[in-house]
Image 1 (tube, rainbow, N blue to C red):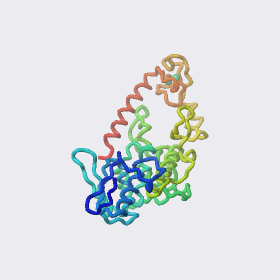
Image 2: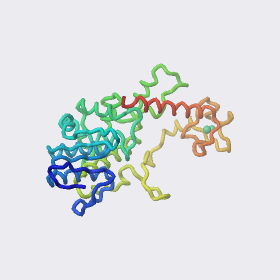
Image 3: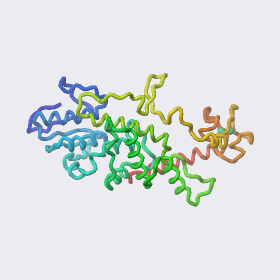
Image 4: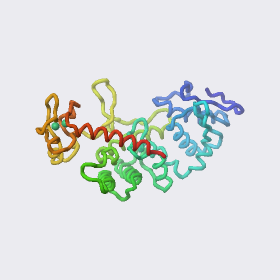
Length: 324
Ligand SMILES: [Zn+2]
Ligand SMILES: [Zn+2]
């Protein structure tokens, strides 16, 4: 709770934020509500506020608010764990002043609760791009042109993959694929999840990141900005009446028709793909999400099982290499 005393540090716990009429809000996330409570405590005379919370979202939001509000008092973020790591938000803001204006956007774009993260692109890689001077000035600005949002997001994520001056994420994906291919042969191709997303899939992720950043930037306001979420990478599921992320727009093909015809099979028996009648099996290729057997998960193609096992272990490798 907020005491308003200038001598005793005010404590704000994420799991027990206060319910006060003048702080009523329609923001749904506790993370977004906390910074407004911190600012309120300071305005009521507190010189030290302790936020007891472990969430990265809250940390990034506090840095954003500390800088934009020109705060000077002591704000500490303390872990809920026994060893109680303590971060001084003022000192951290001072040290990272140059990158904080783009930090919320970069955090959303590189993966958070509502935005998919990219395999192999961890937060440290993202911070390094900001430190090199890359900006995200439009992502998270409600009235910004979405073309600008998308083009700066593309440049930013392309740079995280070490690619520059690329017009589209599919171009980046192609280059990364070529570089990973190296001396590998056709039987030992780079795994799909290690590649950047396609332009069409990235577009949906950028929409969600833009929406999330706009909500975060309204942290000190009573209500979040009004958006039609169905235009920002989300769709309504009839079953369960929940929102789920759009992975790729319905009118976009998953691959060119010629490619689909070439590499997919239409097997639909109870035990599909176990014989040379399967186009993939006879070509010594694993079946993929483009094949009919993908719907039933019953594929008897030995190469499909091998490919699934390999991609699982590669994904684990990527995760363990991340953020070192
Ligand atoms: Zn088949
Ligand atoms: Zn199959």
